[in-house]
Structures are given as C-alpha cells and as structure tokens.
Image 1 (cartoon, rainbow, N blue to C red):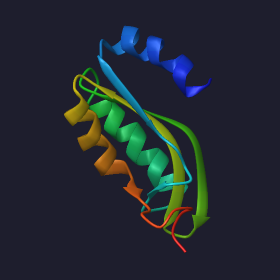
Image 2 (image 1 turned 180 degrees about the vertical axis):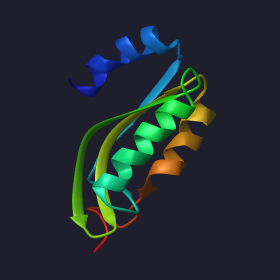
Image 3 (image 1 turned 135 degrees about the horizontal axis):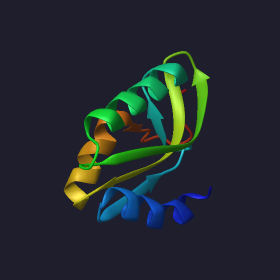
Image 4 (image 1 turned 60 degrees about the horizontal axis):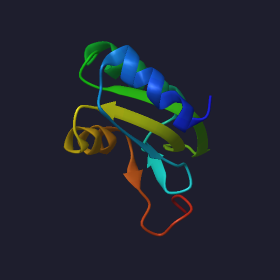
Length: 98
C-alpha cells in the first residue's frame, strides 16, 4: 500500500493525528534489516495508542546500515520527530553511508 494511502487507516485505527514519511535514499537504520523489523514490532506493541511505525521498504545496503522508507504517526509533530530519531539517522552526504 502506498504511504499516502495508509494515513487515513492509521489515523482511524489508532486515533493518531500527525503522520510523516522518510525515504530510503536519505535515511538509514544503524543495524540489520532483521534488527530493524524486530525493533519496530517491539516498539509498536509497547507504544500502542501513542504512536505507530510502518515500514514500507528496507534495504540492507551493507552490514549495520539499512536504508528505509517508513511512516510514523503520533499526536504531535514533536512526538513524530522524536520517534523518527529512534529509528533512523539522516545521511547528510546523500545516498546512504559510503
């Protein structure tokens, strides 16, 4: 499901008000794709009703560097940004880590 189409369902299902997306060419998770999937599953279970993370695509570019395309929902922009900082870092040089 395309990221923008998921928003209404997430808003309705979880009662959250703000959603943002990050694309894989600029953002990465410091770990393997399996670690990322486990982290998202655990985080969503613990924070149900306060925030929600959806992974649209992941690519393990190299060991310890997984590019991601994700959406995060919460009740404020500040909460969404805080959640993003837990899951991904921005590559300031572009195109992922070298």
